[in-house]
Length: 191
Image (tube, rainbow, N blue to C red; front, side, top):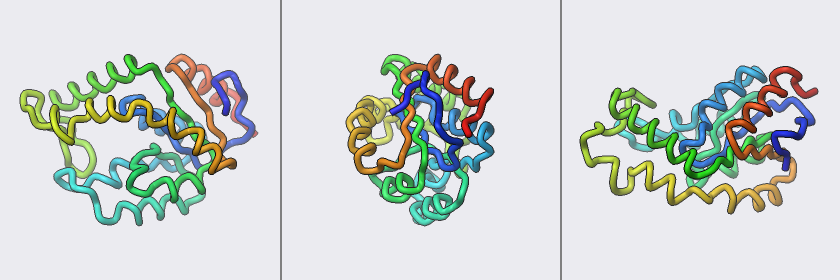
């Protein structure tokens, strides 16, 4: 496993961004797509259909983009079967392993902003209005989801490395580490 201080030994063509909800996976995926000229597929857009219903074609869509030569996506929906499709094809995992108070604050601010501004997300969906209870409680509570899954990657990463030894993992423990690492990658891309 590499850290922010370690050079990347190759220029990756297929990249997964791992991290707890609110860590910045999609933002980083967009940046990585620019740096390495990769096709960014936002996996939430493949999963969420109209009215937040799961799209029946989700797994087929994941298979289709994973078969491409050059891509980057967020590593999510692992319980829906994406691991078996994405991990064998990927070459690099960038793991955003940030302190919980930081990602908690980020998710809270993002959720408040999206609800207040009624930001349109995937396939016309918007998060529930700020002043309603819907989405703040129950199975759709994104803050509870984050809390319940905050140790998911710490628990999973040893098994991922063991079962997919071809995957190079870069573990970044703070946004400063990410910026240091990205600055080096952007100024001197690996060969």
